[in-house]
Length: 341
Image 1 (tube, rainbow, N blue to C red):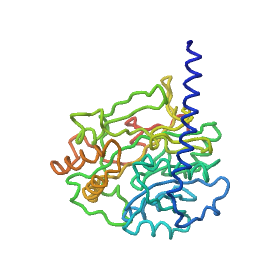
Image 2 (cartoon, rainbow, N blue to C red):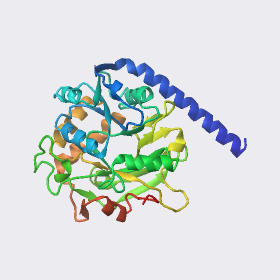
Image 3 (cartoon, helix red, strand yellow):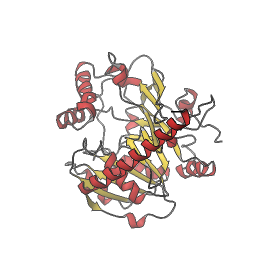
Image 4 (cartoon, rainbow, N blue to C red):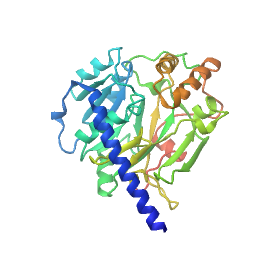
């Protein structure tokens, strides 16, 4: 079989896989019960945020504030059976639609099936940002330009997807030293990051880059760095009902959407997701998720967190760098403005 035949066969298999994800998402949609549906407010051209959460009431006020300030028009949220009031809080937001899911997070492919269904139903033709409540999207010129300036430029450049590296943020000192207050900007506490210590490889099937490293690899997976969480994401996509996420936002089909980097040595515009998982709330959250056992590979990631935090609850090191702004991240090579000026 020639190279062209192999390529055609691979593309055919991935199309079949995408159809299976759509069928699975439709089946898993039975686990969704509407709490508050305001999707009739969505207008053509609106920019949408999709997110799955559980027991994140303490984070949600700033999450909504941050993305509204960027210019997001509507939030579509899946509440995975929270019992801390977060679901009720989200449902009260005038620009938010909420579904409750009592099903297994793990068996929904960690929420991907639920969001694939809702994106297929509501996001067609919209720029769509998929983020967790502890992730904050940073892009070139975000301090002076709304996110619509970015999506308008992407539309004009005929670009359908935009990549962002997940950058783990952490405090200087013990994680539990400074209590996080509801509604507070978490970067006021978790303001440090690893400026290096990253590895990059290419997935030749899905075309996406695979990035690992940072404090989680350094502290929790130092003996098995290949098991460290992936940091590559494609969170911003001009959605089409025929698209589907495969593994969180690490991979999306059609696979051409994963080509958010320049293969020929140039620079393609990209962003960063500031990941503020590591606050004083992290120990209790890790213990809860370990007890639930709803995460990838038997929750080995949360086992590593629980053990690591117990032994050494301080992620800061002498090579840590304090976050200033997006230009700092560009200088460090963690993001790029490409040819967007």
